[in-house]
Each structure stands twice: as C-alpha cells, then as structure tokens.
Length: 97
Image 1 (cartoon, rainbow, N blue to C red):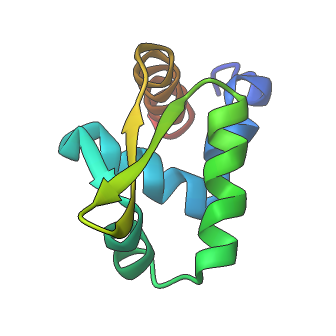
Image 2 (cartoon, rainbow, N blue to C red):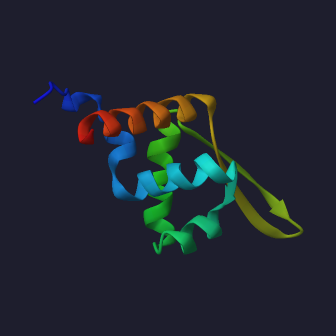
C-alpha cells in the first residue's frame, strides 16, 4: 500500500456543501446566490455560512449588487480557489488510485 498524507485534503473544501459550491463554480465561472441555493437544496442561511467560509479562505469572491430594485448576489471562484480546488482533486485521486 502506498503512503498517503490525509492532511493533503483541504478541510475548507471537503465539507459537502462547500465541495458542491466549488464544483459548480469550477465549471460555471459565476453563479447567482439563488441558483446555488436551489441546486444544492439548502437554505439561505446555510448557504451564506458556507460561502463566508470559502470567501474567508480566499477561494471565492462575492459580488453584491442590484438588478433593477432587486438585490443580486453573485459568486465566482478566485484564482486561489481554482488552485486549491485542483490540489483538492489531485489529493483525492492520490487517495483512491
């Protein structure tokens, strides 16, 4: 059996909800808050908590604005987030390969 360092798994990304956010953003580039909420079958409060954790890690950026008079929150992955997500995927591949 080969040696694997479990510490290579990023705990910030590894949580199920945050992994879903990162996986979606890796492909979508940018997502509206309500799209993520619907896609991930979660509540507004729960999604907000997970987005703040990813933002604090520097993995995503949150842009708030308006569409007419309606508030609009958009989320995008940062370059640091792309790098961290790629490293996370690589660590998983090493774990299961």
